[in-house]
Length: 238
Image (cartoon, rainbow, N blue to C red; front, side, top):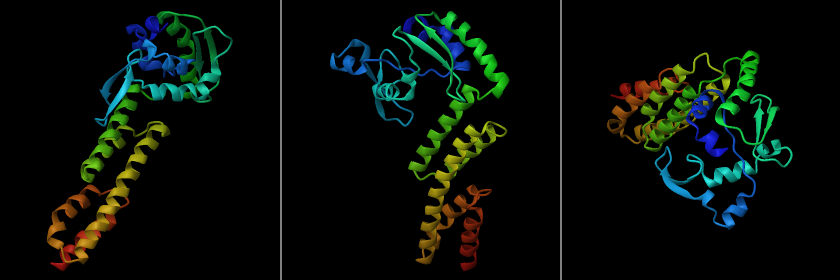
């Protein structure tokens, strides 16, 4: 079923729009112990540029992630002893909508899932497009990297783009974007603390340009007033 479904281009195209695949495998620990070819890995770089080992059989999935899924409630959907077993699950309630036993090809599985997709859309609306979800994920990585380099204005620029893209979108997506803003403002608050201390120490000239740049970037955020007051105070001192 792996070859006929998960590497089937037609099913992959269907799944990219209609499903979220959750994979669990029994006896993973046995496969590790026996050094099975099914758990061979290769080295790639994750979105942050760090090296990680992904499974050759399932590119994009690490062995650690697979083991975590095996220990998650996902395994509870398995019924009987016939594998593979595919559970079509309502993502809102986590209730099983249909259990599909045995091997199916990509078309058969897609045809079985389509009625449930239609039912979910009628009940809950169209949901979140995978492309937009991925855009937010990529943006959050960009924000994390910018903050790690102390580039708060750049991080705010990415956040503003994400906020614009998620207007009138489901709350789950907005919450992700807002969580990124919280991280940015935490770092921005620390930066303002630093500027304030340097000003108090008589180092106004060294903070003038970066403070003004940060203040401009913080316009429209909860830290706008504080940053503006520091800039005004710095001007007044001149």
